Length: 128
Image 1: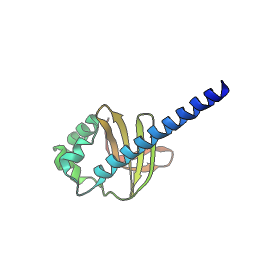
Image 2: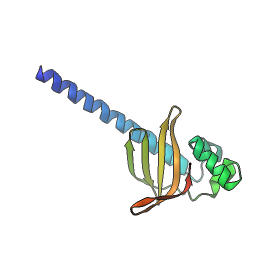
Image 3: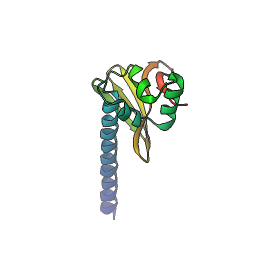
Image 4: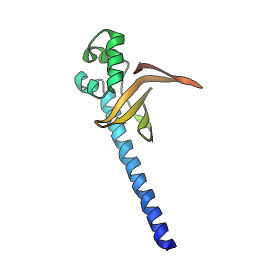
């Protein structure tokens, strides 16, 4: 019986590790596409969580496709991906991007973020 329990536990760990790896790959892909300065603005806007998109359009008094090109989203190399539950953080180039998992996939909730020590990140783009 112990052998079966150990086998089941090992299978569960392998399954969860595989899921985490897939989530990290998905988060990395969304972030890389979102941060691509040559990316289509409409496609980049579609990667935003609805509240984040609404905040951008309100803050800039412009449609997302016009406003998104004004943000310092320069892309670069992904240096770290962290996924916990339905949230993620990606370090790409000089930027930090936050994402959430939705029914439509991973969506950006904040970008153009800089750490401030013990204080919350300072983000040029974020939802409420």
